[in-house]
Length: 201
Image 1: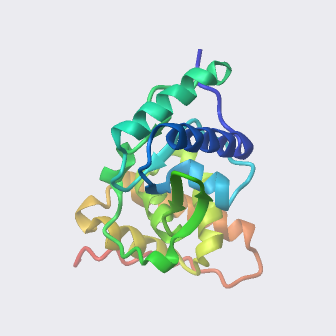
Image 2 (image 1 turned 180 degrees about the vertical axis):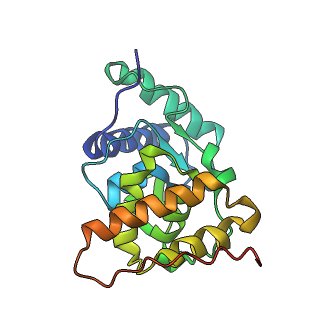
């Protein structure tokens, strides 16, 4: 059986339960940065559903991992997948500045405090991943960031990951989401010139 896709409400309820488990078992405060679909669901698209919470900072202590496992055990009806609250995505964080003032506090509990990475950082990650499941997230984040040209998208990925990693799949994905973004925002100035990929050609 596949893990259920979690709604915004279910994400908040599970985060609260993790916090309650921590409060009952440790005095340590956990401050974490999140990204991915859960961040999108909590901040930028309340219809978004996801099956995990992606942490992109350090701080996943043994106490926290145990609390996460206990919450999964208490919610068997959700069939939460192993690692439903994980930090695997931190290896994919782009090399972009993340001022503390640009991070958004999404949960402030007794032993757990969750922030979201800035929208432009989450957008860079979505563009670089270039998966079909990232398309709607990218569109929501483009609106939030205020993207005005296709070149801005290429610059964001290039600044975050380097020109060498601008693989064809990423270029294709950027072009596709930009064209769809234009279609959703007819009436604004169209920018259809080919992007400068910074390849020195």
